[in-house]
Length: 276
Ligand code: GLU
Image (cartoon, helix red, strand yellow):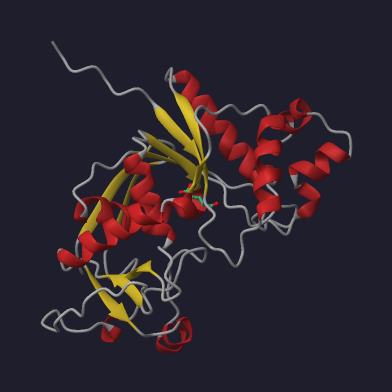
């Protein structure tokens, strides 16, 4: 008998750094529609690792606003800041496998080193210059606890990575050209988004990741982490982003389009859904 297909498990993964706006709402609604169509369900993950930018009042606001909009999730909310030991175990595994190296270069160093205009998506981070990497023969220092330096993933230069997006089809990227070595752990002892996201999506048995198109390029980085940790990657579906009247991508600073503002102005959830 054939093995039954895994039950669809999706997730909503907002970061509590501001109020949720129409853009989040539309992506999350798509996530719910896809879960329902597949007979599965969604989890809610609170991506609150960046302690400097995340605030508890935004966690309360996001759960309230999501429920108001008509989104449903099962199981208690998962909070990333409470799952550090899982991320640390993954870091130890990446270190043991020689996939990462410590890096003292700052963002400013990276920007200064990039003289040629590069044609990557402007929402994505700059390609980390190859000359900033230690040679592969450099002995790897031990991981400290706490971590006090940045650690980067060494991407396999020249390898083409491919994935099929459920929304927009096949996407390809060349490691080292389209994206470079990326952070897995920060010198303030926090896992990077890329690492925490992979560890959680795998640990929570997520079968499809539905999120905004701004994270599509990150999928290539995440696929490398899945492979290094010997984990199976989920399917991916990236939603087109909503822009404002000037064509600028909505951000948390667009408070006028925050769900909360629309609700206070008397709009119903159904109005919001009918107008995005
Ligand atoms: N928390 C991330 C964000 O708000 C989304 C992570 C994801 O969906 O992979 O940008």
